[in-house]
Image (cartoon, rainbow, N blue to C red):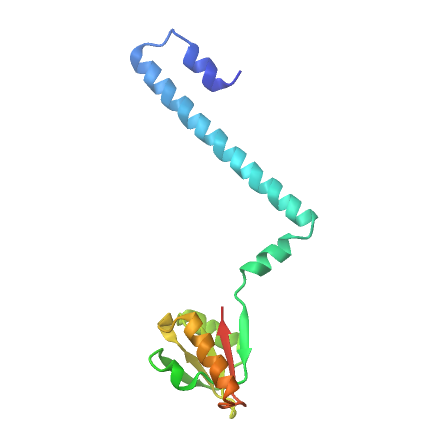
Length: 149
């Protein structure tokens, strides 16, 4: 028999005390539900860890990069561009792009970097369309463009 049940069937409470006791029992029941939820989460993580799925699950949450051997070119106009950046690597540029709320990083043939589509003004599917078109047309084939999914 749970504590909630015992407190609600006890008829010796006066009206004021009964309301307070009922409120306490409701709060106690809420705490028990939260504890059960926490235990479910712990058990889920144990199962995922045991089955080596935890690492795979969190890898799904990481942003994916698509690499193209072209530049976004004129299709990217209106998306905003920052740069050039020098003496950086891809990891640093991705961090800068993330801070600018951008999803395109380009590296030119001379080694300078540009961040494009700041504030995500161009929709993702349009960017893919521009990059695929530019690849087929062999537009700036030595330039490297990464799009963050």
